[in-house]
Length: 155
Image 1 (cartoon, helix red, strand yellow):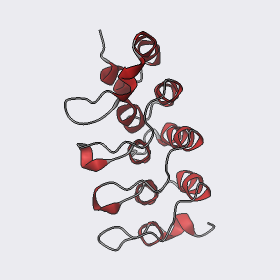
Image 2 (cartoon, rainbow, N blue to C red; image 1 turned 90 degrees about the vertical axis):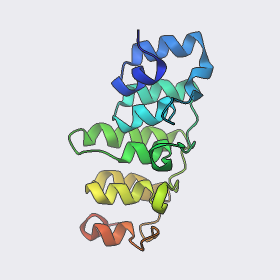
Image 3 (cartoon, rainbow, N blue to C red; image 1 turned 30 degrees about the vertical axis):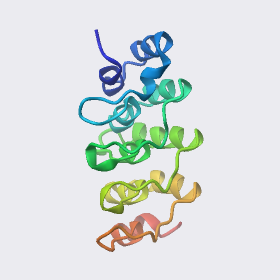
Image 4 (cartoon, rainbow, N blue to C red; image 1 turned 135 degrees about the vertical axis):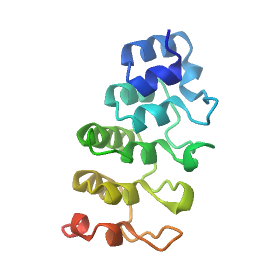
């Protein structure tokens, strides 16, 4: 049977709900490689799993000690573009639940930097509407606007 981290990574919302109904503290459980279930559900673009975790009180802004220090919002923004609609939905769900749009991971990258890197205008719009700064610099000086100027032309 799937663990809470496996269910989150695979998007098995039904199994996830059963595990969390049985023990709600699992929503904040750290994996051996340094992430919580919400990091996995968000990274693998599983909105139903993200929704279940949010409903069960998963921490929205915990930075993983592994995985370059990402918060769930950073994980959600990191899409390979094959599931961009689901990634955007994960970002939307996290923001609506109160996730910090300014959360920085290693290198001082925000979810907005990642949205710029993947070229998702829709994700960028959500993040900017939530207060993310398109001119916030990473450690190397790049800003979301400098990474993808076309994404931010109308913002």
